[in-house]
Length: 255
Length: 250
Image (cartoon, each protein chain N blue to C red):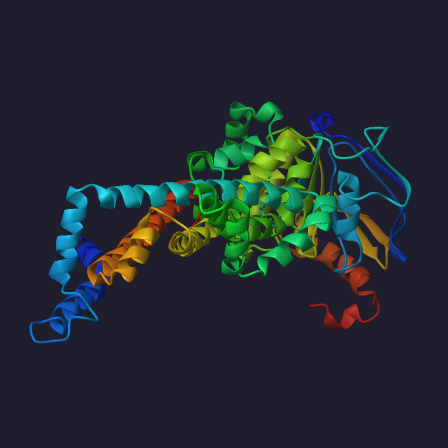
């Protein structure tokens, strides 16, 4: 019992050892007497964080970015899921759409930013659409792959037991696709932040990307570093959320 | 024979099955009485599994007819259940829910009763991955029986199990068949399994029925001299070499 508890504590601590080491190194590199134009003193970043929390701007930037990310994820995810089920289940739709989608997938997302700005200006939409475009592919491809790799034996079993199409979908196809769907979701979260940062740095007037961009122009090193740390934390939080979702949705899998 | 009214008769006439130009089954004529237990044996690729799938309605026949209980067979229906070689349980449903798939209107009480029949009442509320291979196959047997079928088709159901579990399962299948009175067809490549379970053994060789032999041994059966007599006949027909079997006989 005792060693089990220790093991649990060890498992909680060990993943954080490297980040802690990095912070210690950071302190060491910015000790008095060393060059601090390339890297701000950690305390300054901390100070900046505190002042930005106090004047409310930090929360504003985070929430604006998070809302954009969420909207884009919802839009791109929904379209991705719907199209994946359409092409995964219907041979005709697959023939009609899959080639186009696979072709679009090869376009580097950042290459279409300029086009998007011309179409939608630098308002809110362009960021949401960019994110949607970015998250669409991981969700589409993994869901499609999940549908295609459903055990044919289970489908045949469904036939033998006279399951109606709606029941085959709900009892076999949907749960069978869920694991790959969640893999797609997890990958799309990574793309989501990546695309959002890029979009926010090019065309924006608010958000974390905007904060980083203005900081760069004013050479506010502490603010740049803060933006990077924020992205790291947000990315980690998304990953935790995805893992949690997997855990509660796929309880039937051997662990 | 008093209970055998529960099973349906099967009548197969002049059945031919081709995949493209390839003839898989040729001129099959077979009559199975209500409640009879028939084993089909043969080399792999001889078409024995295809015959079973045709009876279930999973494939369509090229020529001839299959009549179940006097009526022409049309598609899949709930009176005829199929047990696959793999359990094919839905991993995302607990055991009882899996068995309910086989019961009329997914009736829980029927499913529970079927699980009790296969001795897995205590596993109702567990995920399939926690079960052993033999237990999984027993659940799939329960699923097939939950709908009280008139015909049970078993496609090498014990092929993936270890020898001891297989003996257990053979006893279970024999017991359930004796109690419930359905007609049963088992496809197997294990000749002693066929002799242990079946009233009649059919050997399919080169797409045709080569041997149709009644096993006149009292039940419950034990493997011994009497069964090896039948096993020898059946094996020599499968192996297609009547003369040489003498050399190998023990």
